[in-house]
Each structure stands twice: as C-alpha cells, then as structure tokens.
Length: 239
Image (cartoon, rainbow, N blue to C red; front, side, top):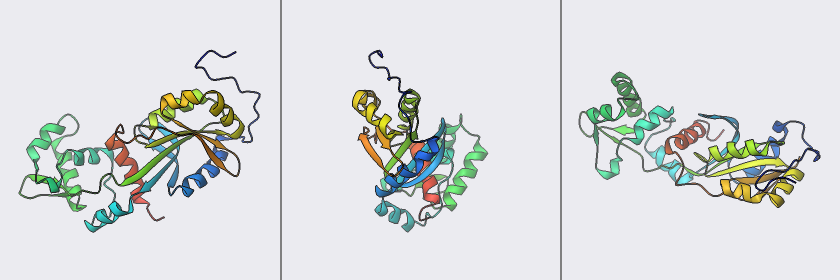
C-alpha cells in the first residue's frame, strides 16, 4: 500500500500510447477548441515544455498595432530593459544615466545603448527630451490566457514538478496522462495536483478531457518570462 501523499504504482495499467509525443495531437485539438494557438516543444530557461498555447487579447493586439509595433520586442534582456522604463501615459520618464545605474550589473553601457536604439526603432520607446525615455505600451499584458501542458506516460512526480515550474509564466498549467491512468490519478490523487496548483488532463487517441482544474495564476507569474513567451507567439500570429 503506498504511503500517504505518494503516487501509486501503475505499471499494470497498459497505456494506449507508445510515446509521449503521440498524445500531442488530442491535446493540441483541445487547445484549439479553447481558442489557443499551440506550439510544441517550447524552450524555456529551465528546459522544454511539451506544449504551450496562448490566446491573445484582440483589443490589445489592435492597440499595439496602432502604435506601429509590428515586430516582436525580442529576447528577455530587452523585455527586462523595457520593464524598467515608465509608461508614456504616466507622464514620467527615466534618464539614460539612471537606466545605466539600474542595469550596470547585467549589461555594459554600450549594449544598453544598442538595445535602446532597437526599442526606439521598433516604436516601443519614445524620448520626450534628449537622454530621457518613456515606453509606448498600454497593451500589456497582451494575452488572455497562457496554457502549459506536460505530456507523460508515467513518472507523474516528475511531471508535477515540471508543471509547477511552468506556473512561472503560464496562467494555467497541466499534466496530461493517458486516459485510464489519468482517471485513476484524478480519483485517488487529485489532492496532489491541487496542492501544486496544477491541472490534470486525460488523453485518448481522439479526445482529451480536463479532470482537475488548475489554479489560475496571473499575479504570481514572472512578467519578463511571460512576456518573452507571448512575444514568440506574436512573431507567428495569424500563421
């Protein structure tokens, strides 16, 4: 008998899937029905997430395009710089010298200048006076929803840890398991998923079903990582 809080041995449950990648199709279709655009094998600072789906806010997309901001912002360091610049609508600004002081431990002055030039060319940053900067935003956050899914045939403890890490950027994070195995987990160990704030999906060859809802995660997300994820979907929006 398994110890309290541990995951049961399930080697006797035969999976309909030989490979985790075979589970992707039904989950991708499930994401699509929810209005999400999915990307498989999504690279993150701590590893690869099997599936990430984003639903952009059409009103905020339209606002961003009205600023002429057609291109993605770019890598995390550029997004971090942007996060340190006050919004145009606040009437506040930050000096180049103050930015250099704030970011001195992260990047040298000439790199900061280069990145600010890029942000200005992309119309993300404006300069009310020489040496002062404001960002043209008002549309952030650009997404309505970010869903991360870890596909696993077994090894649920590992999947739960990965899915919990994904909550650094995902508003909804799931583990997806083969149907019968997922049903057993949902019946016997739903509390483990709920404690982690992680949802559970049951996957069959032609369908996918939510068994445990994740704790929606908006306030606790890392804004820079989250923005980086969304910017990668901005690059391919409409495709």
